[in-house]
Image (cartoon, rainbow, N blue to C red; front, side, top):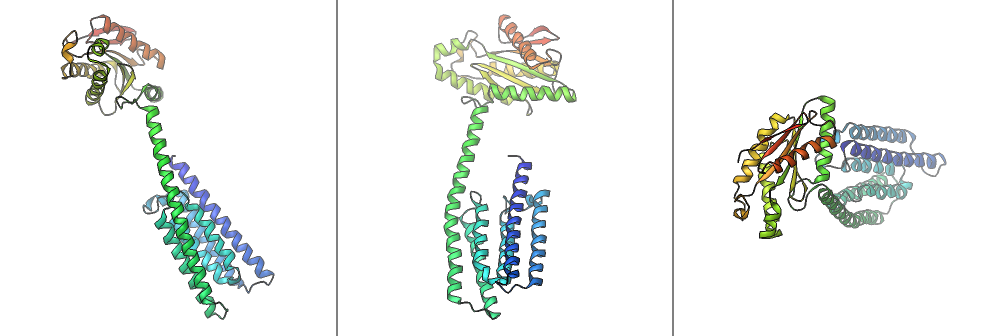
Length: 365
């Protein structure tokens, strides 16, 4: 989920809470107009104005992304809920006969924390709400309104206990949500990564290369692609076994990643074949990098390398550059693949460069 989506969700949450508070204000005004409660109209106007100020401030904060500075409130929940506590207690102070109805609004507000807030946060906010409720009851009683304090204390305690129970449930929901997010992340990694080597897989390689080609078309520049294949790898597997072959491929992935630049990409294309993308590199600029990689591989002390025909594990590579060797994804890969084919048939352990559609071979044996 990107930042714009997160901002939209937070703005929508504040807007939804604002509608709930507006409904509570409308209920207070309606009941007061009908004479069912002694509502102070100046007090109601003050509450409506304060609600407008608080909710507008919260809405602007969410819309402008200022909530990102609140590192202790990553989902922008605690600040809006503290504002709701302030406003709901003010409403109950102005219309004590409606305090139980207004109190229901708090439990509705808690639902915003489902899956996001943990036990400690929910219990703390519920405790603040319970203290606020009892403080309102004391203020109303001092104002001459007959309220049984033991009963009101029991209501406040019930608010806190209910909040704690909700905190337990929300903690479990948050844990399940985190596990689901981790599962999705792992599935995404599995969809784009090779399980054996940990390198990007063919699908990820294709996505990145197509995006890079689009970038070069739009802004200019260069891009080089190399297809790399392990020489006589079937011979290696047949003699030492597939498990040893897997170990060799993992080591090879480490060697290639070590040799490439930070912005370059190496992916396992399939079997013993690898594909490389070199960002902002022409064929002439990429060739020395691939040559160093080839030398590094032939000098690496792979286990059982002595059984190979040349007494070492080696690779061949075909290199093509965009746009001179191909103006589309398919044409570029075909040029690189054709160059690899020529490197193999020229004796292996070498690189072949496709230049303007004509391949030339380079080797350091």
